[in-house]
Image (tube, rainbow, N blue to C red; front, side, top):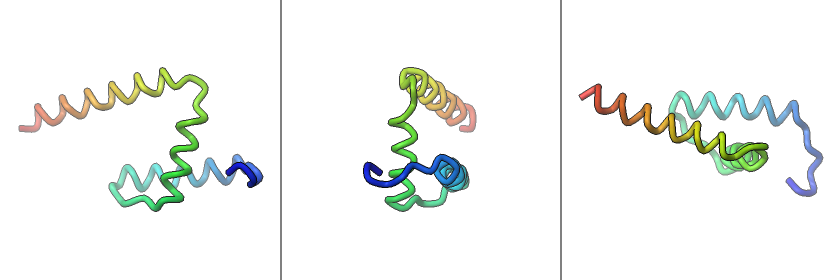
Length: 68
């Protein structure tokens, strides 16, 4: 995206579509993965992102254990 003009509205709309695919467990194309990766790399505070991921992972483990 270095030479392309940044379009926040398009990027946000694309992000919503991709998150919908992730939630419904559909596959992502390479371009969709790059959009998500750019969002992650542009986070102001990556520490909070890591903390949220850890809690989501912990929640998944707990749900997995409880559903047995």
